[in-house]
Image (cartoon, rainbow, N blue to C red):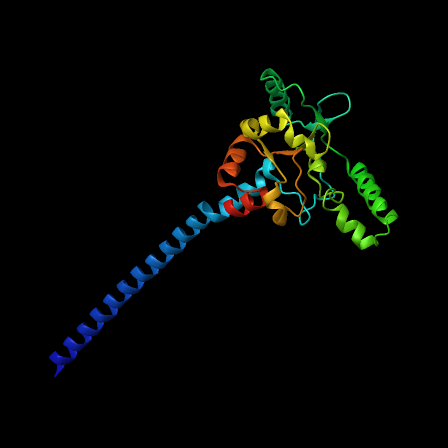
Length: 236
């Protein structure tokens, strides 16, 4: 009887010991899985999103995304009256210079950086024109937003957008426009408001409006046949 009791005790101890080993292995596996999952999260999508936010070149400014009230940008002069983001002005100046070297003499920067107050003036002026035509304020603002963004939601306030030559649709018939279509991505610029992307950008087609996003981004955006809104969603 005593012998059987000893055997039962020994077997019980062994069972408990084996059970503890299994539990520890399971806990170790779970802990390692959590660590790897965390690493994947940091190295994967979250990291992509963080890079998007940190990449000043593709800052999204549109009807849904306004600049913060404390936004500041360091500017450099294009000429005596026009300015552009200091970090990208060399690409802009080089692009215009190279276009002229290629025989495109009819290209110049008509508008670049705009202060919030200047943007407000442009917006109000356009709204007032529609009001004078008998439109309601709601209608006037809606029509204005097709061509002029509200202050703080314009890429011109960001300092990374340029309007070339005269702001009209005849620009798309010029050698300058054709040259930009073929070469602008090499300098980091894209046609920002395309005709086939109006439903996404909520801005009417503007052949004169080009946006700096960096050459890598510009080439990828064109390769994917996307607008900036689509591209940011794609890489996020």
